[in-house]
Amino acid sequence: MQGALGSSSRSMDKILVHGGYPLSGSIKISGSKNSALPIIAASLLTRDPCVLHRVPDLSDTNYMLQILMHLGAEVERASGTVTVKAEKVESIAPYEIVRKMRASVCVLGPLLGRCKEATVSLPGGCVIGDRPIDLHLKGFQSLGAAVRVENGNVKVFAPKLTGAIVSLRGKFGPTVLGTDNVMMAAVLAEGTTVIEGAAAEPEVCDLADFLNKMGAKIEGAGTRRIIIEGVHELHGAEHHIIPDRIETGTFLVAGAICGKGITLNRVCPGHVASVTTALTEAGYKVVTTENSISVSPNGSVPKALELVTEPYPGFPTDMQAQMCALLSTTEGISTITENVFPQRYMHLAELKRMGAQVQIEGATAIIQGVERLYGAPVMASDLRASAALVLAGLKADGVTEVRRVYHIDRGYEHLDEKLSELGAHIERVKE
Image 1 (cartoon, rainbow, N blue to C red):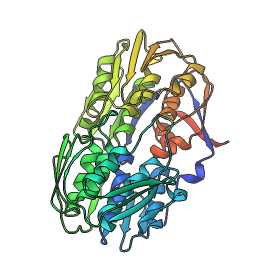
Image 2 (image 1 turned 90 degrees about the vertical axis):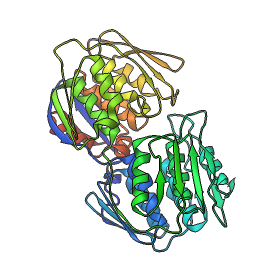
Image 3 (image 1 turned 120 degrees about the vertical axis):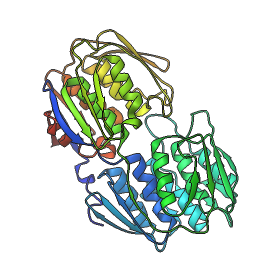
């Protein structure tokens, strides 16, 4: 498969950020990682070719394509376009294949829907906290599948899937991957499935749009209640992945931290309304068009904020770390309460190494803005934390050395190159 290993060769790199250089200009935002992963998996639901455009070149998407190849699919990649033809499909995905990425569990739904059985190894935990797949499995059981978890593997089996009312309400809030998984299994079930407590994220809508192009009958995506009328089979389809809203938000914060004025093109402004609202409340000038957003200083001193992370359309947990970086040099006392993953604060210790003044009380980070940050060697702990450390380095005096940047390559397509286009002095070097 051409390009399948495009990001992995850079796994041992580190990024050096030379702070103090203002950003200006414009860039294009890449396709959404969190849309691409389940949509790639959904291509297993048909024997026909599926053509996917704007698939970002990330280690996560490349791992997902490798999983599909292991399952028997033919995969071709040319730049941002991926073609998948899954004429024959195996139903077993072992640990060696799925261990690197939690989102690999989203092959369970399409394999169950098409093959009526699947065995997928559990990929393990995540440093941002416990993210169980219990609701995925309960959803499959509601459709008539038998479920077993043994020896680190999830096994699901169903001679026939039957539409049902599936509740995905859980103590952690709506589950995006759970909604995706159940939706992909239900499209080939007999009868009507109603998902109650569904996730409403744009990525769920994007998957539903793709499935409908394949011949599925899905209504209500984007609300807490999704109705799926099962069909006998699906056919191939062509689809453009939506823009990545977290990459959009990350670059908006970069423009706020040290921008003279930057513009992001190929975006969906409505998907990042909670972020642009927060930046406006903090005192930045934000201007949107149908598919672009500009952010620039507003001539006034930025103000402290009180933020609470919530499921979409609330402020996203995936933007919490980046906002910590911004608020660390914003005058006054800001607070961020993490309601989605309360343990997701490992980046704060690294920001403290750069001079940030932060303390944690329960699930709330209390940030006392300081006049300046200082470059230091720091260690990325997860995808969004790594981006936050790069953003902090843009503002800091001196050089910030960010290690473990393989986290960045999981979810940001050429982050360092795009920042360089905007005027950042940033370089990627070997460890």
